Image (cartoon, rainbow, N blue to C red):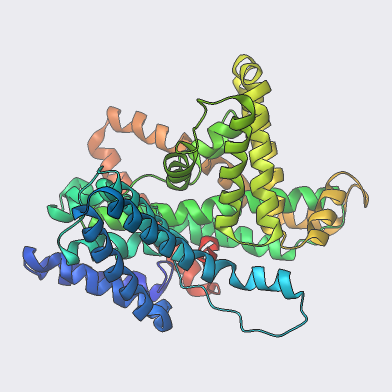
Length: 456
C-alpha cells in the first residue's frame, strides 16, 4: 500500500484514523501494530511472517542482552548484531555477489528483497547498539516494541527512527489540534511534491535521449529535482501521518540544495541515514579525532558503506566513493576556502557536484555512466532539438521545482502570518484544499509511479 494512491487517500486512511479515535487508549498501540502489519502485508504478503519473526526475535534477544553482564553480554550483542547484518546482506547482496562469482555461468533464482528492509534493519541495529551501551533499556512490552519497528508511516522508507526518539510518544501521546493540523498540512505538501513534481520529472526523464550536452544537462537536472521531491515528499508524508496519530518523527531533509559544501549537503539530505552512519560507524572508528591517514580511511569506509546500503551494484559503490573523495578533499584542503568565498558560489559549487554525482546513482551500468559523462562534456555535440523541446514544454515545472527547493514559500508564510493570523489561517486552509484537489486530479489521470527509495 502506497500513500500516493486514491485508495489510501480517500478510503484506507480515513477508516484507519476514525477507528483509531474510537479505540480505548490501552488498545491504541495494539491497533496500530495490527494496522502496520496489514499495511506491510498488502505490499509484501510473502514476507509478513519473516517480518513478524524478526520483530519477535529482536525483542527477546535484546531483553536477554539487557539482563546479562560481562562477556556473555558482549557475546550475545555481537551475535544479535551479526544476525541482523546477515539478513540485510543476504537479501540485498546475495544475487549481486553470486553474479560476480559465477559470471552468468549458472542460473539461479533472485531473492526478492522484503520491502523496507534497509530502513527497519537499521532501526533494529540502532536499538541493539543502544541497549548494549545502556543508552536505553530494552523495551519490556512486546506491543510497544513492535510498534517502534513497524509503525506504518515510517516502515517502508523511513525516516530511520531511533527508539529514544519515539519512546515517549509510544508510551503516552495525544492528538492535539496544532499537531494534527501540521500533520495534515505536511502530508498534503508531501503528496503534492511526489505526485505533481516528482512524477512529472520522472515522466520527462523517461523521454530524454542523452545524445548531446543539453540533453545530458537536462537529464541530470531533471533527476536532481525528481529524487529530491520523490524522497522529501515521502518524508513529509510520513512525518505528517505520524503527527496525525500523535507521533513526532525525526526530520529527514533541510533544503539540501542550498548546502554550502558537500559535507553540509549530507547534513541536510537523508539526515537520519547520515546520523546513523555518523553515530554507529564513523565515531566508533575514531571519527575525526585521528591522524589524516586514519581520517581518510574512516570517511571512505563510511561512504562505501553508504553506497552499498543503496545496493550492491557498481554504480552505487562509485556513487558512495565519489562523495567520500569529495568530503575527504573538503576536510583536508577546501574547507577554509569554502568558508571564505561568497555564499552563492559555495552553494553553486555544492549543487553542481551533487547533481553530477546523481549520474552514478541513476545510471545502472558503466556504459550508461560513460555515455552521460561523455555527452555532458561535449562528446556528441552541444545541442539537440528533442531536449530543448521537452524543456520548453515543461519550463513551469522546473521553475516551481527550483523555488520549492528553497524556503521562499515557508518564509513568505511566516511574514504574512505575523501580519494577519486570521486571514492567513483561512488562506492556508484554502490553499491546502486547492493543492489536494489538484493532486487528486493528477492521481486520477496519471499512471501510478512508485517511490524511488522503495527499492532500497
